[in-house]
Image (cartoon, one colour):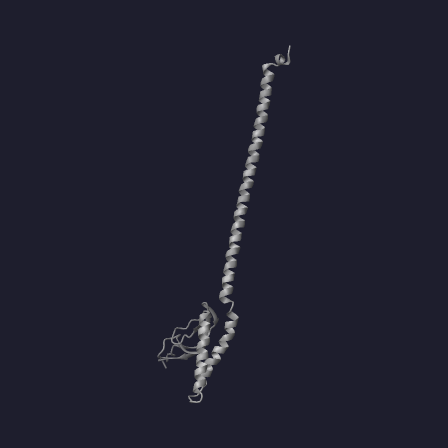
Length: 188
């Protein structure tokens, strides 16, 4: 008799069950491996997305920094030129009305205008608030004076003009501000 004839259906059934069980275990292991790999792929995708977002943020910050450097790179230089503008303004205010000096005054006036135009070209603008309400963001009050004909907290006089660079304050305007008139005590 051959070996095949000796195999009983029970043995054959057990072998088949064992093979099925092995196949199921292998399938379960494959499912577990697949789930682990899918989880790892999801983590890596998230890391790539985060790295991409970080790169974009760094790029945007660098662009903003470069833009600010272009805008405000001349700030120190402009601040130093403000003294020149002040001196030219003082020279025009202090000179006498003499015919001999008149050509010099015209030259000083042209120089001052040229300087102010150049500053304006680079977005350095004067703050001359005379007659406007006091703004502590742009003005520095050096004194307060009673002025019955002016609204309280109005700039009466500008001692020194202020300047901004692209809207950012370079130097506040030094001003004299009106204060309300003192009320006389009527009970006396």
